[in-house]
Image 1: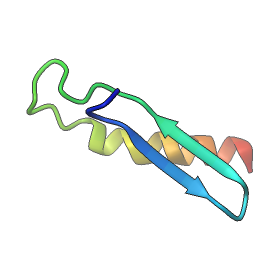
Image 2: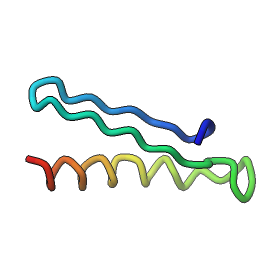
Image 3: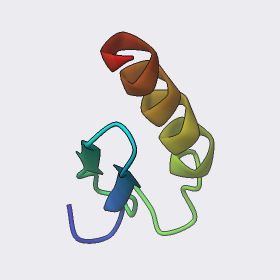
Length: 49
């Protein structure tokens, strides 16, 4: 998870999201995580709010 980790804090809602991924799998040019991160953050936000 050290290559694709993201943290998201929402202090108003006391919400913390930590996403651990392996961004370099299968190659270092794999940049799909850049589209995935906001999607998973939005999904988690919608479930907990």
